[in-house]
Length: 140
Ligand SMILES: Nc1nc2c(ncn2[C@@H]2O[C@H](COP(=O)(O)OP(=O)(O)OP(=O)(O)O)[C@@H](O)[C@H]2O)c(=O)[nH]1
Ligand SMILES: [Mg+2]
Image 1 (cartoon, rainbow, N blue to C red):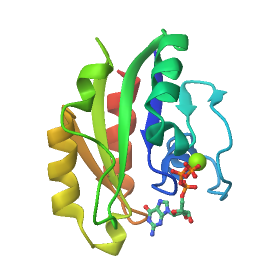
Image 2 (cartoon, helix red, strand yellow):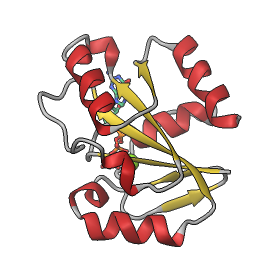
Image 3 (tube, rainbow, N blue to C red):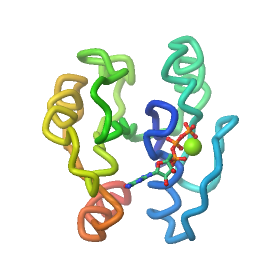
């Protein structure tokens, strides 16, 4: 089952997918929804436009899991409380990225919990173990 990644522009979705796929990390702004294999990458703009997010979910009915990606350096979140309820029947996980920067990781975890993430992973550039833990969760 496919996995869709949603999160603010620059939160680290593409980087995370590249690492999960064992690819070289290569910065590129995501301009459109990218379906490549199991992981669906979305532009950050999809989170700002709820209609686009809904369209994406309807048109990707084979998605089994949703990963909410929260930038660990951010002092705010774009995920409203219980946003998980709009992804009906899909398992919602949360990832705090950039934890190597050690900025706002704790509050970011709280926001993801409030958003309705069932499980939360904290992943930075120095975190291969947590990346592997996420990978095996996504492969289940
Ligand atoms: N230090 C650090 N930087 C990261 C990490 N993950 C991503 N970045 C950096 O954050 C920037 C944005 O990463 P992307 O993966 O392109 O973000 P995105 O969510 O795909 O952004 P959009 O495509 O615009 O929606 C890049 O410069 C990455 O190198 C991390 O774990 N640690
Ligand atoms: Mg991207």
